[in-house]
Image (cartoon, rainbow, N blue to C red):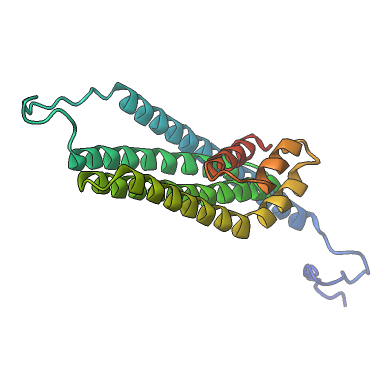
Length: 238
């Protein structure tokens, strides 16, 4: 008597020795791939929207800074004819706060650009931006040191300390500050910058002038130049 037959499971061979039917499996794989492509397209669209919004916010802040009206002080000229130190500090603090907001938006903008590129390029972009951020922190430390020195010298002048003594102290402390910044730079950055240079030089993103700037820095003010250059490379990497 003939027996009732049941279809072989996906992991079994049919009773007649033929291979199992793989059509359903292939269809499922194609469906999954199509879904993944749809998700990728949606993610890319979302990143583009966030990038456009970040750029608009940066432009808005830039316009606000440029169009900010000058401050007017009603204090009689006979009482004071210069901005007080407290007011100057307030203005400087406001300026730094606005600049910090712009820098944060720039970083977010670069992050969105990085997320939209290939993994290898994204890695190189992140490295450039990370190094640039570290260098900017070092440069801000240098600027803070200079401002502190200037304030100290002003206090000495107000206390009628002889100009010769003030100038000698200014020269000594300025040299100490510059040496400190150079030592921090050369102890923390040349190896990292040299590795980046070796990776980017073959593609033409960095050249001999960059290597000279990175490896032979002597003026602490050039720390900002290095940071600017790295940000430029990070933005242009494709």
